[in-house]
Image (cartoon, rainbow, N blue to C red; front, side, top):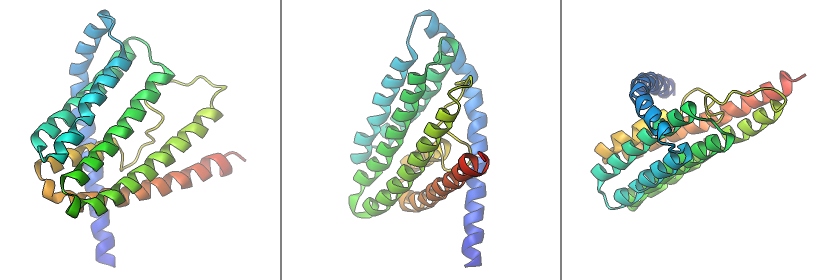
Length: 224
């Protein structure tokens, strides 16, 4: 039992370190993307259009995963993530809107859920059950974050809210960076899907319950 807890702690620590590394790469890419974003703003390109185009390309990965064409699936996933950086950069250089934040977050969740579904289609006999668990856990975490964001937004409606970052991402682990990294690794090493899905599924459930605890503290205890 102790060894299992120690192993889980090590896995969690590794994922957090990977998350930090991803953030560094994200910042480097963002500097390059900002240059392109400024050009697109001058050409009157809408950030929401970029979000939709990126989603269409990204969700195409489901088809390639189902056909075991992992290279093409990986290409779609990477392009989707570049478009995700680009739409945010364009919005910051033009005008950030509430609908734009909603659209970006909603399409991200559908995209990641689709990727999990795609791996289930890739090998139904081996992946279907564990993919269902992962999708259940991922959806639980997503719903908890969205519900938290709704109440948090409602409580701040009388204050000025700065939309420089999506309110749907509340920090911690089991978020977009980890699922993105797992998607990339699994396109290269698809036979690891079961192990990755179980670990990330557990982390997503932990995330969901941690948000519930945070909600109780912030909305009940701290509100008194």
